[in-house]
Image (cartoon, rainbow, N blue to C red; front, side, top):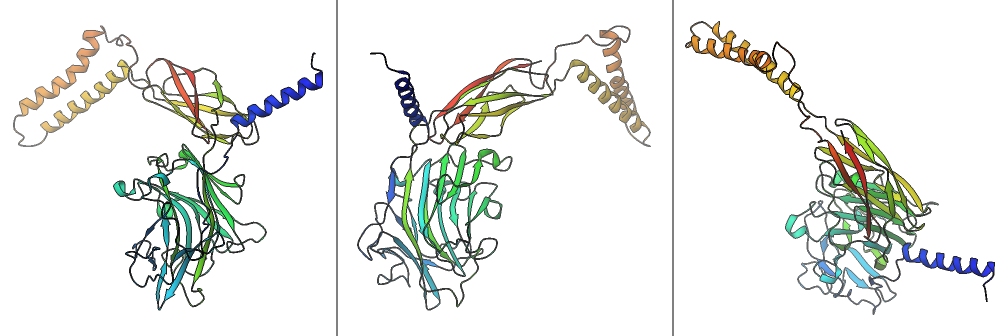
Length: 456
């Protein structure tokens, strides 16, 4: 029985929907998480978290970090008033407490647990922050190479930080990356302001990052609410993108320090940072876009460009673009450095090539002539210095330097004519090349295309 027109449309729609689901973003269930379920006052899961302990002597912070169990934590850490524990309602409590003038708190991390080091994915935590003078809560990441290359060469990804001091306050958080050459106050950062007069302590908010090769996207409360996108091209020229490596997670509540300043009489003790969950998702494979670009012809010393057309699946998210295999003595780039397939299936970008000019035999000859005349003039000038020895030697040298270009003009070209033209050398060499443009999706998958280039 031949299906009717409506049946064929329905079948086609189903196939299209199924195909789209294969290539659009699909984060599915977390590949790692801690929901913080457990008995009241129990310790965080030791198979997922370790602790920094003591005063870490960073940022002029005041707190002593305590572990749970106490272990080697220094006084005034106390097992009867732990700084990190489960409240029995499905939350982790990180507690800052004033102990007769000495503050204690906790800093949990996944460092040292091999299965809890991460590379790429969607990483988020649901947190209710305290909001008080001198407190500095954060959810962030450090490169696992920190023990070998130190900070900031290891890289730092601050998914969320908050302090009461300007420019933040109770209604803003900041998300920042720090790396070699752009750290501290020079980190690449942006603030998020809660809508409708919302604040960090009015309930639980989700703080997250979508992390893929050469691209980090920060969001609040929903993965679609991206407020900052940082591509590898955003870091200062001459510095390194160090975020394609493994990182570990950190949750902490600092007290005092350069940014928030010290606590005062208004700072509650204890102050609590409540974490409902931490989750890490991995995107199902997202195929790289189909790309094509027209050929370009560039005269050495000039710039050229070609339009890049990209096709993907609406909903597959942002894709980072980079180019490679450019001719010698040239530089290629793609603008913009990323495109967005969140709501569209097509995008365009421009592939640019900057080249260097050729140098010729004539140019080299003129440079040599100028140098010879200059040296000859210097030599004759030295003859005028009273009492200078070996005048005859300088005279011969000067005459020789003058005769060299004269011989080059009359002896090789005849009658003062121009030298015989020679092939262009130096700069970007003539020839045909295939530059490569590569696209990286949120899942880390990639696709590429070649751009034909002719240099003349």
